[in-house]
Length: 603
Image 1 (cartoon, rainbow, N blue to C red):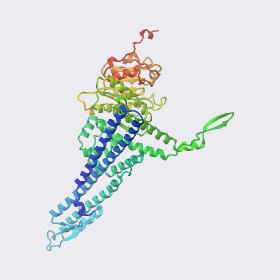
Image 2 (image 1 turned 30 degrees about the horizontal axis):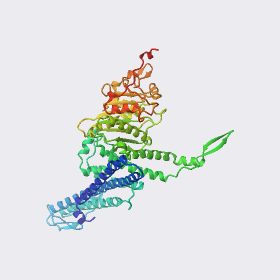
Image 3 (image 1 turned 90 degrees about the vertical axis):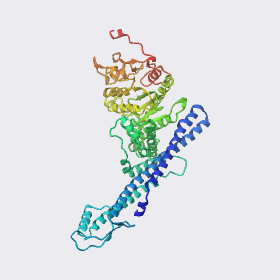
Image 4 (image 1 turned 60 degrees about the horizontal axis):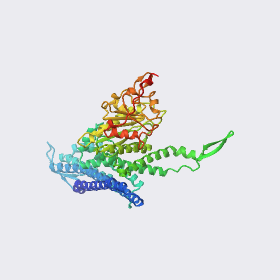
């Protein structure tokens, strides 16, 4: 880049263009939300039939288009601001060098060379002629030493100063040239296919675009206010509120993973950030899955071993399985879980179901997902459910549906108050009942994150009154809630425990909620509470641990008309209704089990 171009460069023009893309992205985001939460929701709630189904399909495609526009406009805005930032830094260096040269009676020429006046050193009789020097960028210690030596030898004292200015100008021009070379391909890459379909390849390309802009924009992002290290939810909330719209857009575009994971940020912000991650990761994983050969159709064959035939895998299938099997299974699990989350997005409006918010997402390992029914920031009643053993992203659909069922009952019982029910798979749940679930470290490791999330709901809440909050746990999820109470402040008003193997404390009064606000459910035929008495319940009592189902624990024993370990949230049951009443703040109206026959302990 030459001197005239850099001198004429106006960062504000690129920043204004970036603002234009950001505003366009905001408009696309608003259009997407209107389609999803008003138009499509209205169609689902009021219309049926083939025409309505076809209309919803077209609306979903339109929503995807707007979401893609939002994402790419955000990247374009950040890239333009990043380019302006880098070029402005180079321009400031150039302007400072020119000003310093002018103050020292030197002239900067159009080619970047510097002309210095005649002069003489103290003690010299003869005045040395002036001259012109051309600088070089990126000098090494050796070259700089040689230049200092030359300046000391030169009879004109202005020579050394002029060389310094020329080198500063050369450095500024090189910095600008490098910035231009860095950003030009990133901006050229922000180009969509010339069609009206946003495909999985488009979203995978958007993820690549994000990586490119993030790499090029590292200096720009580092210059912005950073989130507090290990910050509290309140600190995170204050940081976000203190950012300008441009700075918020940059964080959205370059680090949606960081924004979406910060407890205390508004639910709408976390949702937008996590949906960007969601769409990009879904495109990437689907493309990877499509690249893997499908498993051979002839999976099984029969062989004769001794007198009896045996069914075994074919050699062809085993070869495929050894090469691709584990990854193929993992990709399918992740994509099935993402499909379940998308189905919840697409259910908004069905029988009055509110909009969904994706408050956390990761496909790494067993996966993470936090999905809310209704906006918790404005809700009068919040419930945060923790699933148990074997929970992972692939099976998130069942856990989401449980909280949908709780939302419907609680919403009916809330006397006009608003309700948000949240599925919180924000920890690494034990994946094997025998090998993993007897150990408490899964709960102990996940409990601090659960406590931060609950505190974050306070930091992001916008209603004038404090929300009524219920912590709900199932199976090993109850152990995590107990660990959260034991480790610190469990920021909840009520606790519901279902099928609990134990909560690490021996008494309901240790659950860190007001007395009388711990509720327990044990269904007929659920063996987990019995197993828990010999696992990780509470304190030892005559050779067995105390679980919340034991009378001595002191929980309210809710009437439970379901059977087994998994039906506590079955539609139309007393078990579900009792949970909904507690979530709606009407625990006093819930049906309790009759007290046990005390004589039974002495027989």
